[in-house]
Image: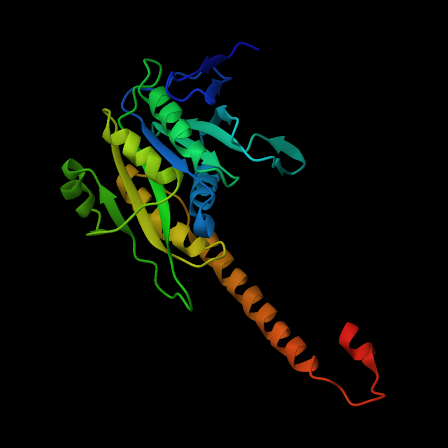
Length: 263
């Protein structure tokens, strides 16, 4: 197999491996990077794009000394946990990372490697997008989408009906991607939506609707909304069972049958 490896001089502990060299990436592409952060927005959004964009193809992967010892597989087929896919039709590159990075020192190394590749002669990307959830406690019924971007992108992003976040902090690998992009020619922005501390498919659906408008996509978000309802129902059921179990843990009368607690 003929493949090409990209190693950034500044990001020495990571590299990008392109295995399918038959697919030429067009100039001015959009790079979408989805990390496994709070609410799992990145993998949720990227998997929906991968599943529904007709011509999307896996072209390679990102390797790093910092990737945790976790393997992923779909329908029994092992997949690299940090994959790169490309849609020629929409000129969109999708980088999906399905494992969390616990070592913060990995972030800068990864950001340099990804941005260096995006700007290489083989890619010449135009912009890069990341996602981050806004932690929320309690019930969530609405999922507004916000953005933070380079100054030159603000007016354009407002035309899609989303509001900018006036002040805040972005954390994790998403932050280092944005910081690295600020030092080069890539146009960078982040999209936010409220999320719970569990996977929040509805938040992913809200962002996907924005991406539909931005790039002329036709991603069906109804399955994600239904999935969110199922997750909430299961969490509610679990909470109810937990409450019932805790109530049963009150000290029983002497001689009472204990088998009821283990059904």
